[in-house]
Length: 213
Image (cartoon, rainbow, N blue to C red):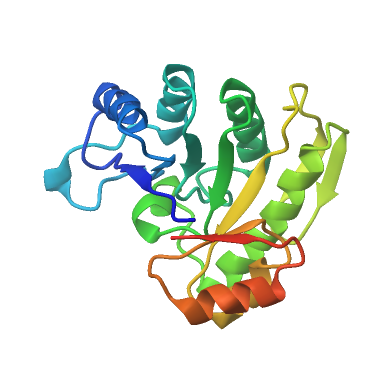
């Protein structure tokens, strides 16, 4: 069954307009809404870059039916994975189980702002893989201590855990990223309707993950 989504373009509109657009999209029948998560717009002429998580929190309260996604969040540089785990758990509660955490390995446009350089794609994917493990551990509600190659977590616990578990969608672009993330994520995110990519994802996803485009 075909489902239709609406993109909340944080690069093109301010936060109040985005919430209004989200309400309108639900009213006209869209099935889900995704929000980009940028610190900077693609082009200066676009003129906007509000915080996606704040916007989605407002959208969760202003809508009732549509599913919500980050599209996508990088949980490795601007955000520590422990912070992303907390944000996602809180948003899932506010959205009454309608939220999916879309994750990706990031873009220099947004991540360079913290002044730590720009890692290679292999390093970024390694960081994302570790971040997903940390996020899932924190969603158990247990105290987490983690010492990895890229991140440390010390005596961290999430105190508000949603009744409906948060699903994770991973952005992929080819076979290598599918091999890395299909075993870890619930859904695939791709930018083109590539049948081969989708079939490969399903073949590698033990969770029976669903593809989104």
